[in-house]
Image (cartoon, rainbow, N blue to C red; front, side):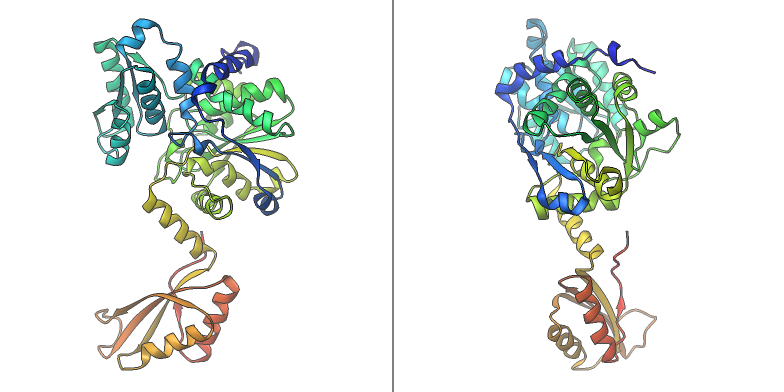
Amino acid sequence: MADQNTLPVTLADVRAAHDRIRASIVRTPTLRSQTLSELTGANVWLKFENLQFTAAYKERGALNRLLQLGEKERKTGVIAASAGNHAQGLAYHGKRLGVPVTIVMPKPTPIVKVMQTQSHDARVVLFGETFDQAYAHARELEQAEHLTFVHPFDEAEIIAGQGTLALEMLEDAPELDCFAVPIGGGGLISGISTVARALKPDAEIIGVQAELFPSMYNILKGSDLPCSGDTLAEGIAVKYPGDLTRQFVIAQVDDIQLVGERHLEQAVSLLLQIEKTVVEGAGAAGLAALLANPDRFKGRNVGIVLCGGNIDTRLLGLVLQRQLVRERKLVTWRFESADQPGALARIATIIGAVGGNILDVTHHRLFLDISAKATDMDFTVETRDAEHTQQLEDALNEAGLQPRRLSSSGS
């Protein structure tokens, strides 16, 4: 087991990093959420790192690393493999400091991420179909072009930079006695745990990973769960955590909790609805842990890092709609009816009378499982809540219309 005293990053390193970078990053607020506290039973404090210029905490570590380059390294430039927030943070601050930045991304990287990185004057190299292939190519270019490789999480300077947000959290909320921290490669929780163990040694530090990518969980628990799938929290979908960061986790982290896609989606939705703030799936992971296991955190003063806000707007819209379905505020009913005038109007009249808002109506006349003289009609309806949905369904059944619900309030 790793020894906390032998780890290469100390509180003094984090404080030095904070002095180094503080003038060039946003001092994001740490605020208590009254509504989320009431909802979860914990005292919930949110660190709004999605308010950084590039909408993610990754700027901190990247800038700390850049500021410690030698003159020759600055002139030659740096390279990284990333399709996400590390690329943005490194490119943005590299441009500010006049350091040439090369980012290697897998070929399937969405064009919007490529363009965002190029907007900071970074050279983007598209290579390979997977991140591992892009990473290997970046290491080849590092040697061939004499560039300095900047790892997204597995370097001491990166870890120290990420830890600076914990200093700010404890300045704003010294009563914190628990941290729920997303884990991908492990840089963020390594930095936070270093600060917490020094300043609040009795605080509980809980890592959070998506169920589909339990890589650090496997290391801490000695398990062998598979790491694959399409998770909303792609920012922490890391198959192989850092060799360095795992030492921090083993030495300083109390536990790791896995969260499913349902709770990740719910957390993203609640943060937008309640806090009016946009977070990506990884950024919502801490809150997702509280929603999934409220008894674990009940009564604690829990610090949650909203570590990023870079989510595709179409995906965000889908997540919000899916949450409405789960809450039974959005429902689709299918009706089989004779294909004759007045059938649609009759259904619409009943829905309107009970206060439902019809969003969409679709006819299906070509399905072979119904009569040629019949039609299936799908009504998508907005309601106030689950109780209102049931009232509407009861009224439709009393009228003999026998609606079949297609949308579900399940997981």
